[in-house]
Structure formats: structure tokens, C-alpha cells
Length: 143
Image 1 (cartoon, rainbow, N blue to C red):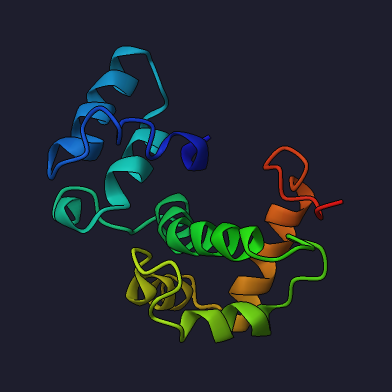
Image 2: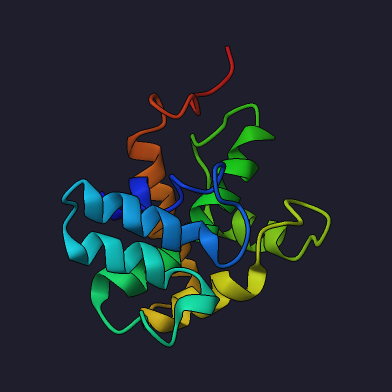
């Protein structure tokens, strides 16, 4: 749930620090579990003093946020989309500064370190997770 909700407020409040903080208020008003709210608040650097990445849910949300978007972008430029995607191809794309330039490579590397997982393994885990829902994400191979 945290992964699905963590950026729900971005279009309405895209500026710092409203993004996440205003969304946190909305989630609390609707009775959302505080663990989910805290995870959402912790995924941005400007909230680290009040919501540190000190719990598994917070660590993993941060670790998967930028990487999952990057993998999604990489899939969109492949005719086979997610099918057969390998960590090595993502690692190679990470070195291409022009590709998905808005994605923070620094956050991707920091996320793998935060969860104490080698980058290639973290990428593989995210590829597997995204591949499992490729249909819903419209990431099945082009026909």
C-alpha cells in the first residue's frame, strides 16, 4: 500500500515541502495506518529529521522508488518490454546520463546500500516484481 500511495499527492502538491506533507494529512484524515504515512513521508530527503528511514518499510520504499521508475522507463523503450530483462541491461542504462535523466542515480545506489543488498540483486528483485504485474502496467511485449 505504501508503494501505491507514496506519491499520490504529487500532482496536487508538487513543491517542497508540501509534497508528502499535505498528502500525509489527507491519509491521516482518512484513517490510513501511520506506518504507511510515515513511509510516504520518509521517502523524500527534506523530511529525514522527522521521518528517518529507520524501519524496513521506509527503507524499502526509498530503495524501490527511483529504481522501479527507471526499470519502467527502460521497459518502455524495449519491444519485448519486461520480458527477458536482465539486471545488466539496467546497470548499463544507469550509466547513460541522458536516459531517464530525471531519475536520481544517487538515490538508486543509496537505496541498494540502505537495504544492504548488492545493486545487481536489488535490480533483479525489482525486475521480478514488476514482471509479475507487467500486464497491469501495460509492459507486455509489443505484438
